[in-house]
Image (cartoon, rainbow, N blue to C red; front, side, top):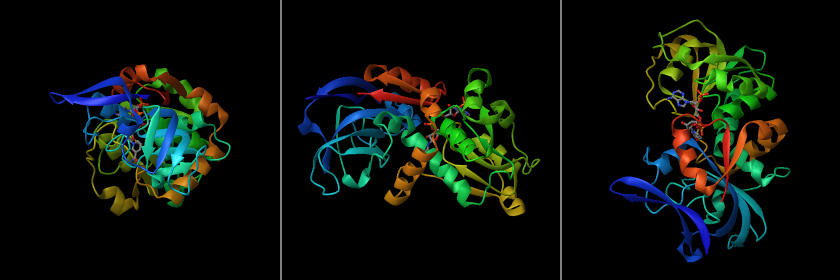
Amino acid sequence: MFKALVLEQEDKKTLASIQTLEESQLPEGDVLVEVDYTSLNYKDGLAITGKGKIVRQFPMVPGIDLVGRVLESSDNRYQAGDEVVLTGWGVGEGHWGGMAEKARLKADWLVPLPKGLEAINAMKIGTAGLTAMLCVQALVDAGVKPGAGEVLVTGASGGVGSVAVTLLSKLGYDVAAVTGRVEENGPLLKALGASRIIDRTEFEEPARPLEKQIWAGAVDTVGSKVLAKVLAQVDYNGAVAACGLAGGFDLPTTVMPFILRNVSLLGVDSVSCPFDKRQKAWAKLVELLPASYFEQACQLISLDQVAEFAEAITCGKVTGRVVIKP
Ligand SMILES: NC(=O)c1ccc[n+]([C@@H]2O[C@H](COP(=O)([O-])OP(=O)(O)OC[C@H]3O[C@@H](n4cnc5c(N)ncnc54)[C@H](OP(=O)(O)O)[C@@H]3O)[C@@H](O)[C@H]2O)c1
C-alpha cells in the first residue's frame, strides 16, 4: 500500500484527494520507483486545479517530475537501488506521475541521478530547471555571447525564469529580469544574478513591429504580448528562446524582426527531449547552479499542501521552485 494524490473528475470539475493505493493499481512499466521527491510546475498547477486540459484520462496521479530509488526493474539499464530522475514524457498527464510514494515507469524516460546532485536538489531543478538549461543552451548555440549586450528573462520569478537568471549570470551574461513582482522579488532576482529588474507592465503595451534594439537575446516563459514586445526589441542577429505561455499562447507579432533584423525565435521543449541532450543538460545544471540557488529560491511542502500551491502557481503567485515530499 502507498499514498498518492489522485485527481478525479466529477461534473467536469477536477477533484484532488490523497488516497491509499495498491502497487497492483500502478500503470504498466519496466521500472518500479520509490519516490523521494516530486515538484510543482506550472503544468502541474493547471492539471490539479483543472484550469488547463492537461490530464488525458482520470483517475490520474499528477506530478510531471520525480526523483527516487529503483525498487524493481525488468530493464537491464537499471537495478534495484539505483537513483533516477524523471521529467516530462507525458507523466502526470497520461501516465501516473510523481505525487505518490511509488511510480511505475518506462526505463526510456529515466535519467540516472547525476553524480554530485542530491535527490532533493534534482527536484529543486525539475522540469523547470531542465527547460531553463535547454533555453540557455539554445541561445549559446545561436551565437549569443556574454558581453554582446543584455539578455532578458521574462517571468523571472517563476521556476524556469529563476533558474534561467541564475544560469545566464553564472555564464557571464548581463541579465535583465522582467517580473510582475518587482518589490516582492526584485531583491531575490538580484541575488540570483540579475543586474537590472524591469516591471512587466513595460512589456504589456502593444508592440510596434520594430522598436529600439535593446537585447542581445532573451529567454521567454510568458508568450503572448510580452514575447511580441521582446521580439520587437531584440538586436540585429539576436535570438529568443521561447518555452512558455504563462501570459497566453497567442503571439501578436509581425515578421519584421525576423526579416529585417535576422532575429531567431528558438522553440524549446523539455518534455520529449532526447536522452543524450537531456543527460548533457543535467550535467551542465550540476556544474553551473551554485549552492546559493538551492537555498534562496526553493521551498519544500507536503502532499496535503499541494492543492493550495497548485492554485497559487496558476495565478503567478509562486516564487522559484516548489519541492514536494510525498
Ligand atoms: N516548453 C517546455 O518544455 C516547458 C517546460 C516547463 C515549463 N514550461 C512553461 O514555461 C512557463 C513557466 O513555467 P514555470 O513552471 O516556471 O511556471 P511559474 O513558476 O508559474 O512561472 C511563471 C512566471 O511567469 C510570470 N507570470 C505569471 N502569470 C503571468 C501573466 N499572466 N502574464 C505575464 N507573466 C506572468 C510570473 O513571474 P513574475 O511574477 O516574475 O512576472 C510567474 O512566476 C509555463 O508557461 C510553462 O507551461 C514549458
